[in-house]
Structure formats: C-alpha cells, structure tokens
Length: 550
Image 1 (tube, rainbow, N blue to C red):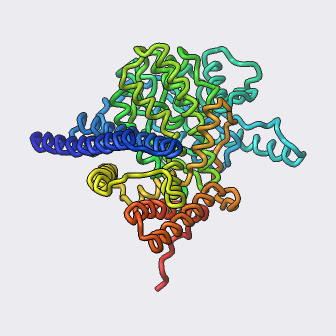
Image 2 (image 1 turned 135 degrees about the horizontal axis):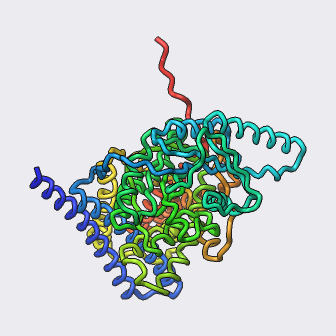
Image 3 (image 1 turned 90 degrees about the horizontal axis):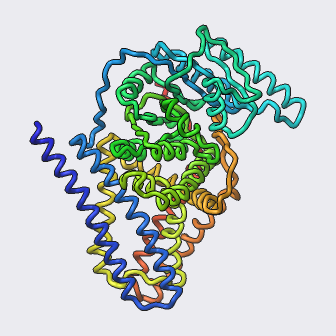
C-alpha cells in the first residue's frame, strides 16, 4: 500500500511539474518572439501589456500548482487528509464573539442558537452589537431602531448571550478591539456591557469570531482548542466558509464555487508553509497574540488579512483546519456580490503596498515561502485588469490589426495549445478529486470574470490610497441590478460581438490571415459567451424544485 502511495504521489507530482514546464516554455518563446519582432511603437506597447497579462496568469497558475504539490508531498494524496487532534482534556475560557451591524433578527437567532449549542463547556458568548442607533433621518427610523434594539436585548437574554456596545469607530475591527480592551480591564469610554448569561464572563485565553450569518457545528471548538493548546506559538486557526443558500440562488452558488478554489488546496498549502491568513470568521485566535500586535488593524476593510501579516512579522504561526465546521450565507445578488468582492479586493491590494515596503525594509523578517504566499495573495485581485486586457486584445486585433500576435501557426499549435490544455486539465482534475464537477467550477470562474470592473475599481483606489467605509452584505434579499449599472460588462459584450462579426466579414471578403482571424474570433466569442452570464446571474433566484403530481 505504501509503495502504491509513493508511485501515485510521484505520478501526480510529475504531471503538475510537466504543466509548469510547458507554461514556462510558452512564456520563454513569447518573450523571444517579442524581442525579435519589429513593430511600430504602439504595437510594441500593446504586445508588452498583453505579455505581462499572460505572465500574471502564469505566475498565479504556478502558485496554485505549487500549493497542490505541497499537499501531495505532505499527504501523498490529493484527498483531504486531516491531522488527528488529541482528545481535549483542558478547557480554557473562550469568548465567542459575534460582531453585527443591523443584521436581520432571524439570521441572528439562527447564529446565536447554534453558538448556544456548542458542546465546549467553558464558553462565553458575547454579541457585539455595532448598530448605529444614533443615526436616523426620520422619527419613524428612530422608533424602528429602538424596537430593533429591544429585540436584540431580548434575543440575547433568551439565548444566554452577553451584550457589548460602545461608541462607534473602526467598524468590525474597532468593536473587536474595544471588546479586547474591555476583557483586559482597559475599557474605552462609552462602552455598555450587559451580562445576560448565567455565568460570569472570565478573561478568555482565546476568542472565536463568527460573522452574524455563520452557524457552527456543535463540536467546532474542540479540535481547534486541542491544537492551540499543543503549540503556544499558533496565533490562530482558520476554518473554511461554506454557503448554504446555493441551492436556489445562482449568485450564491457561483460565489461558493469561487470559495472552493481557495479553501481546498490553496489554504492547505499555505498552512503547510505557515502562511495562512485569517478570513475574519470561523476562526479561533489567541488573545495574547492579538494583544502583542495591538489588536486588529483598523485602517483596512480587510482587517483580518493585514492583522495576519503583522502576526507573521512578529513571529507567530498560523494554521488551517480543512473540515467544514460552520455554515453561512453567500451574497444573493450581483450588487451584494460586487460589494463583497470590492471590499475584499480593496483591502487585499492595500496590503500589497505594506508588503512591498516591509520586504525592502527587512527581507529576512519572514521566510521566502511566506513572502511568496503573501505576494500571491495580495496581487491576486489585479486579475480584473488582466481579464480586461485578455478580453479586449483579440477584438482590438480584429478591428484594427493591432497588436500583432503569433506570426507562426505552428508555434501556436505546438506550444500554446498544449500549455493551456495541460493547465486546465491539472486545474479541473485536482478539483474533481475533491468531488467538484468542472461545470460547477466553470460557473464560479465565470462570475469572477464578470466582476472584472469591480476589481479594476478596487485596484485603482487601493494604489491611490483611497479608503472605503465598511459595508455589510445584505442577507435574505435578492434583486436584479438595472442594466445601466452593468454598463462595463455590457459595453465589452457589445464590443466583442461587433469584433467577431467584423472578423467573419474579413475572412469572407479578404481571404487573408485566415488563421489569425479565426483564432482571435474564437477568443472573442469565448469571452462574449462568458459575459452573456451577466444576464443569468442578474436573475439570481431560481424556482424551487417541485415534484410532479401523479
């Protein structure tokens, strides 16, 4: 059995490295052809832009493949092998905190109920109510807020949860930091704490954070605490996010499939390199670690990622536990998906600038593996600009003849096609090993391509240092966006349609450069097809399945 495992491991590793080799060969030839080509300056400029877009895809593809190699090297298989944790014998105090900003009461009740039912005995549930009760425009709004406030208090009493409020600042990171100060007897002015629990709040050794829509399994804490107790240098252990509203909602389904790519091999690979970062929910953190770095970062809308980087800089370790142990709600329409993606992209790209500054200041502060992982994570959301370049270049060629692509069909057939085919096979094959169907994975990737304009806006604002206010993702509601709000996608959609028709006419009437026109028409049609899904996702709610009456 051991010999079979080793052979299987070597076979998988060989296939993955073979795909990397073809990718590097393709890019080498691309660089060579570009250096030898003679074009007008504007053709050279566009060719270089295209080349860098392809290089970006190559680097991140290699990064993904190396994560899989890391998993295979460690576990000898592509299957999800989880570390066995010792049975927990000690139960240090844990504060389970649920930050919330005017979340729906039915959503909060489900979360508080599931947290109430956690089997861990020494837990203290604290609801961090960050609702702005002082912000209202009309008397009616004021009355509604007062009613909501009383219902929150009644809900906490009913489900044995303490209630913490304070003067608003710093959004989610701010209220968590204010709570950390409170439990360390350094409360900020204006705080309110209502002890609705039957037991007195103890100073916790750990805190566990759940977003307002996250419902944990009853045994969520036991294996995590066991691992934290074994290693005092672990700052936090992150667990996956899983959306339960994917069955009847197209956006939620595709968003959950986007999460799959990250929470499967990528997180396991990062954890093996001690480079896992916090995702803000479904996570257990050591209070001492947070205290050492001054709490969560309050300047970023992705405070969890920046805080993780600071923890690594201060010598702390981080881990990922791959078992799905909590269930939540994904964005249910394009507006909320775009809002969520913009927040994640802006914060992550903002960390990129800090990463570069820290790297040049002290490159030996972290291992090369950790620097590499943070580089991949913080540059990922430049993908919006990369998508735009890859989408418009074929259409630009069909309409203007610029820029010049491969002059030799032979090179395209012998190098590019094997490179793209092997890369795609590696990507979908590895996810298939985790029981994900390629059709479903494609759906998640299509939603990501459609979000290109959101990522571009975030990249521009992040590079300019512009901040954004924290906005929660609405739950329980799904609406279609007006088409004028989707003008970037629809404009590119029309552009690709026109370019494809133009290319077909050129082939028919000119009978020249048939190969070049055909290839670029294919890519125009391919991206045109993807963008048609903007209309599919803009009607997010699907009809419930009904059995036929007999």
